[in-house]
Amino acid sequence: MSMFSAFDIAGSAMSAQSQRMNVTASNMANADSVAGPDGETYRAKHVMFETQAQSTHYGVGGVRVTEVVEDNSPLRMEYMPNHPAADEDGYVAKPNVEPVHEMVNMISASRSYQANIEVFNTSKQMLMQTLSLVSVHSKT
Image (cartoon, rainbow, N blue to C red):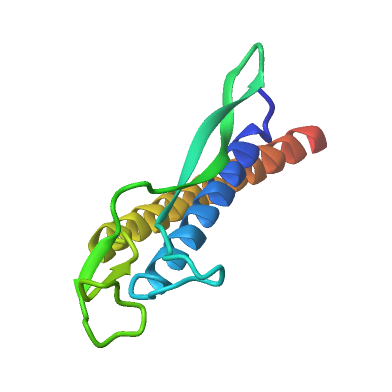
């Protein structure tokens, strides 16, 4: 395993978690919208991850986002008879975003991102200590 593998693995995880946080922020921002830019009701989105192989010798080499998928669960129907977007029964279709679930998802992504920063920093410190030991031994 290369000395820099930990940097690659932590970096891929930080990138994936950053994308997860962006998608979650988009879900939160649209939680109460009636229609998106295309005129349709916004649907919650979720990030799908997969492991990526580093090589055939070392196994897992990180994570990547494979796709962002729309949640097909039913939209929330709110009774608002005076709203211009209300159907004939007075209901307005609202996004299928659950703010509590989105906050949990955001906290989880943020903690995972922070943990990978720690991996990155610890690997950097170990590499620096190794280089300083090599430097000391090469002078003697």
